[in-house]
Length: 115
Length: 112
Image (cartoon, rainbow over all chains, first blue to last red; front, side):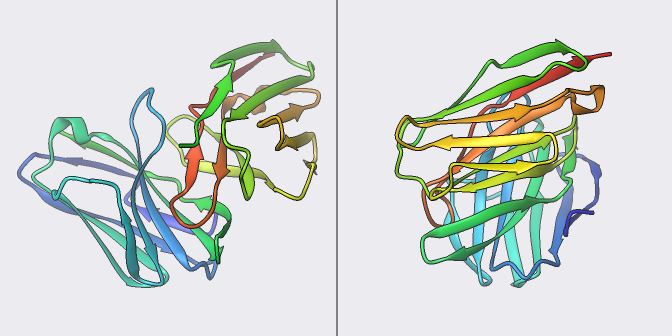
């Protein structure tokens, strides 16, 4: 493992289901991120948390709801998703000091399929 | 707005060949640049991180260079192996939490 652990690795859910993705980092980093990666598209930043406070929300639909209970854990709660939300969801962490971001560490991702 | 381009989008080489992957960015006011590899369906694995004050970084068969003034970085892979087959992405940090821009990647195939 890379120091950032994501569960589950794979998830299939119906459009009316509610599920959650979990991310845990053991690196002592002060920022955590959710990214979406769809086929043949660049990585899309969804949410950024710094010291448990959300600092960025890139116009993500409300059917995605993040939660950061402490600096080591990050969740992404999912409800009433659409088939186009099927993608690889990646969690990352980094250490940010002032304006410098000292590089990302990514988890292995959750492959989400919405049926 | 920072834009990051990686050319070529795909590359196929015979095993043992030395190769260079390119990453170009439009705004030279960066803090660092990071190279990743991604295997199909997996997360991103960090390969090298170059701070803006550095010109290059090396790890094993990998060497990454950075030329801020021309907005370019290269990843050199020596003596390529089939296990190097993956998609390689570069990410440019322009500061802070959210100002990291990723390229679309170069898909590398090393043929035995």
